[in-house]
Length: 249
View 1 (tube, helix red, strand yellow):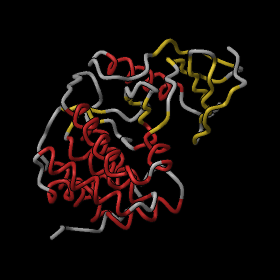
View 2 (cartoon, rainbow, N blue to C red):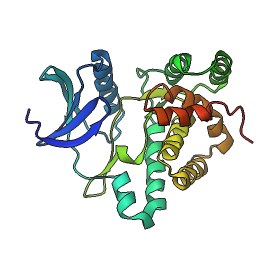
View 3 (cartoon, rainbow, N blue to C red):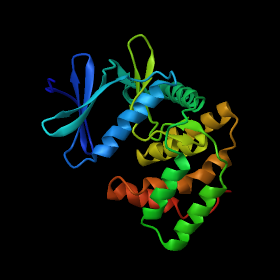
């Protein structure tokens, strides 16, 4: 592999382009099990027929684990929104349509969303009463088996030159309730400080999918708590501030 063209740097990983392939190289301390699980998630989602880069291999590079997949040439939806702010509403609508196409799929071997969230709430930096309330709320939510991306945001969508959209980064994929996935995307907009984008996104999703806004909002404390166990201190503080919201009016 020729790793001299860096595409992006993320927490614990660096992404390179090598000809027609994309190589995601993980730091030495990154868990082997997590790398293999990410590759397996992506391979399983490939089988649903969604437009995603195909996995080509899992390998070692200079003592570090790496996932090799197709390189998709294009611009992310985040880049397009920055370049053409006047089209922001149009791009957010595309984001919603793509997310709904993900939720229309099932993939029975993916991890269950509820199981993953219960594990994360257990280790969240919250008092026992709040954790109990969140576990209880989670158990009371309707059980679904839709494919959930887990990190669905404009920077994980690439639009090719001919306008074909591809969905990237399936490391957090699970099966479960689509509204939890929507709550996660809403919070990602909020974390970026794009409050207008967050509201536009949520309103559009609820309108197009026929979902009650209050139903998605009921997921927000649960999702915020489960996401608070990763990320930087500032993000954790923001997410933990959402966990104390008992109910939305």
